[in-house]
Image 1 (cartoon, rainbow, N blue to C red):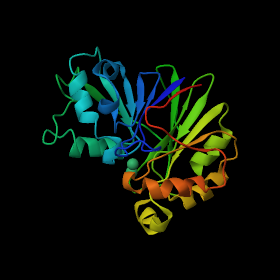
Image 2 (cartoon, rainbow, N blue to C red):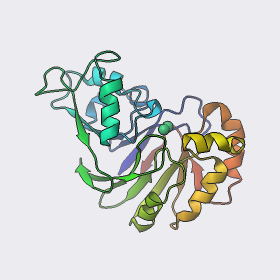
Image 3 (cartoon, rainbow, N blue to C red):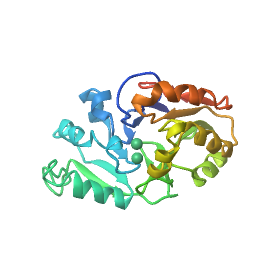
Length: 253
Ligand SMILES: [Zn+2]
Ligand SMILES: [Zn+2]
């Protein structure tokens, strides 16, 4: 499996925390950075996008993506997400006000995108990978994803405060190669992390005690302006598995 980090706000690179992962060039998880990270030719190869939740930093390039691929694909790109997330996309984004409704363009029978509901804990097989949404604990309905093929697996928690289930799943996943989770605000802003259902580095350290397998842990979602404060706080966590997830990193496993 090849995993390419399209956007993450993990390491030293400047930029917004626009989130997106690309698997084998054809399946994306979240769409915060598709059109910034990929050429148009690469965008046209994407057949499925699994969205974790409706926050803008996870969906904001979807409109430009649909415009870029329009007329270049043989069938609709499937947008997989929780029903609540799809509802938000329909009502607030592809609503013919902020952006045209590409789920009926050019025609309802042959649209550019098609919405597909996901159910937590159910496994979906697309493009030779198996993808399982796992519910996590965020301000809006949100799922992380387990992604597997016959050789390897990784888990992306997406944005989440304290949560248990996705750690149980990780501990039971054979061939787990990478666990990606978040740290959003400095330790001094734990009130903000609690209010917005995110983690500080200190909370992250506590969460990772639930992960019982020895795999690299990639950290993403740092608030850009707070990186100088947060990076030393993350380095201070006594857990050797922790790495900063780097923008444009490519993993082969
Ligand atoms: Zn969020
Ligand atoms: Zn986010």
